[in-house]
Length: 235
Image (cartoon, rainbow, N blue to C red):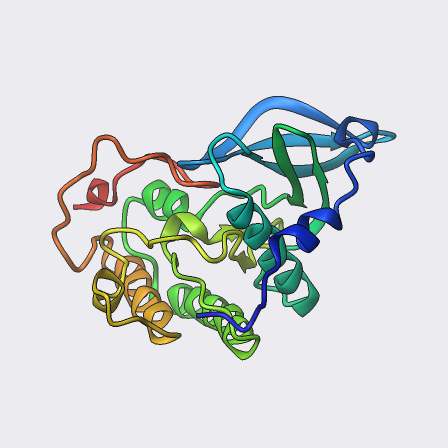
């Protein structure tokens, strides 16, 4: 569900192919995350070596043009909200082989990293603050007519000040253990699916374990911005 109308041709045509990523940024080999269809790498802005950004690379051979347009359109809409709990799209480039999205770097890792590092549940006041920040970002999305669809620990990152931000919007199918039941059927879903997933996040923060027993998926890709650590480490 989304209030954003998408026209794949006009959306992608707004990104001039004559502009080049390497004219402004130095793309490094450091991988920040990897998804089923994309990877995120660290980059430096040329002339400003202390300015680091994240670059999401979406290969055209794996991602349909309509999905590329959707990714760009949603990120632009989210950036226009200028909400402190949502990621900012800084720029976009395209080549014949891929779409390149320059995003605000969130350097302190994900909530999953935080929970695993602590090896114990978070204190209630800290968990409350985190959940409120994420809920505030989701509320902004919902007012704009956007369902996030993949709220989970790996998809909530921390900035330099410890503020929670959600970098990934409009995932195609959600994640086992966090996905709302209605997303598994054919009857449709709405903003409530995000509320369900946020409830799972809150449960994990407060207990150190997921509320449901989910069999591991050995062939599942590493989440963008997250790691492959198991929630069961806190059991």
